[in-house]
Length: 161
Image (cartoon, rainbow, N blue to C red; front, side, top):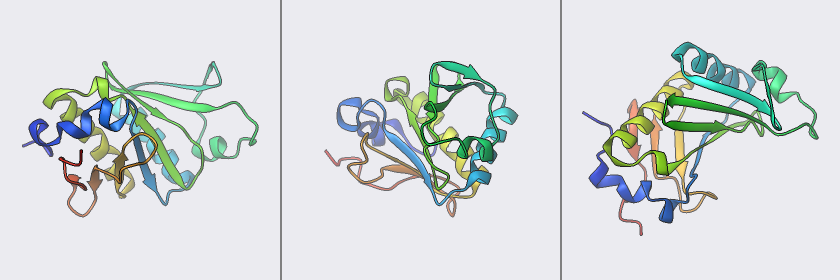
């Protein structure tokens, strides 16, 4: 059975309510956690592309990535867990893993299942909660991976609107 059912959570997947690119994050992380995400992306066989500015580059280690100068080009890791769903990791700091998903690509039960599968993969690899909140961080987190439950759970009322 799916972690979440579309009919119960469709408000959380509405780009007009949540923003097109809701914020997804893992708190209390380190360079080793970033490396674990990079290793997971490779081991899962997902398509990916790392770039700094507009230039595609090899994916550095987590430690290399996070030791770049503050004025370096913006880095991002674009990952396609499925051919039609893009996740963009933005390594701003070692202490939090941030990424975006495009809600327009996650409509219906298939979209919910894809997101839940991805959040579970990240959360299980790191052993940490993975929380999604509206673009800009408000309202509070809605669905998220709960390591104790080992699945994605609702953290807010789906009728928050």
